[in-house]
Length: 319
Ligand SMILES: Nc1ncnc2c1ncn2[C@@H]1O[C@H](COP(=O)(O)OP(=O)(O)OP(=O)(O)O)[C@@H](O)[C@H]1O
Ligand SMILES: O=P(O)(O)OC[C@H]1O[C@](O)(CO)[C@@H](O)[C@@H]1O
Ligand SMILES: [Mg+2]
Image 1 (cartoon, rainbow, N blue to C red):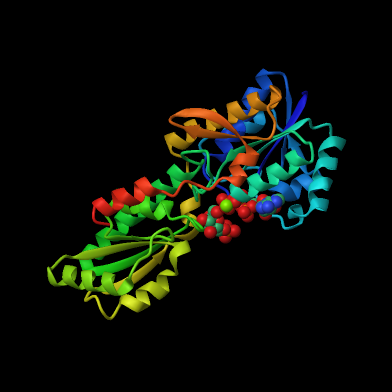
Image 2: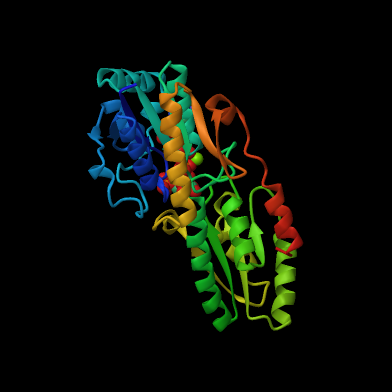
């Protein structure tokens, strides 16, 4: 293997730049040439790439987002799109590819592997919905962003005796909402993995109001409903004045935490080592603090462990 490529796909997350840097540095040490494809699979299909030398990846480790940019590409979901991508890679003499992204992007990586092209996937998505890794890249930074915002909101909520419904991202996963609720001492985490009864929640909030408590924080996972609708259905029953905050894309950006910087560095190094050792069609993952490799076939077939332990912890803590 002489020349490898790297790309970032799906929703961006903090730590992608640090991963690119680690992968490039590892590859350069092994005397490999590296190119970076712009805008995920969209750029890959067009062969839109830049040379990545040591200079190209300097001063990016601490930056959120991805300097290669990311995209979602409907065209790449088709066999024609995937074959076009492999043809572009072969024409450019790129011998293998490191792909950073979420569950969807890893399906794309598996598609390339099935076409006989060498790939290694890196789980990178704030949703933390990818099996065979305890944490995906970017999750820790997103959680830190969320808890900073929730702490701020709690200050103003307390000053006005208000209830806040705070909507967080996560697509179909309630991981961000559950962990954020535990870490901020919120009253409720409403998540898709657990049924909830709004009438019962209203009753409990009413009691809380009558006890003279000065705030209530409800963290809603986007996969469990819309904050405006939840607020609308509780506002007249709970005593507290009700407000809504949708944290949105704020959650995805910002300087990566030390956890994500280290994870990025470990993932980037391991991905390149796997690629050159001929272990293709694998995803790197974090398991009990070790970096392991799992076949993409298993990752895509697998289901993310239901977050039982986190949900039980929330329950025991009265969330
Ligand atoms: N089943 C699939 N087969 C081939 N390619 C896919 C498949 N699913 C997704 N992709 C490709 O990966 C891209 C990104 O996927 P998706 O939008 O699901 O985001 P993701 O990688 O899961 O990241 P995140 O969920 O963090 O935003 C898609 O736009 C598409 O190009
Ligand atoms: O950036 P977009 O395309 O609006 O996508 C938002 C989605 O991406 C994620 O941030 C990451 O998958 C989800 O949590 C969210 O539903
Ligand atoms: Mg996804």
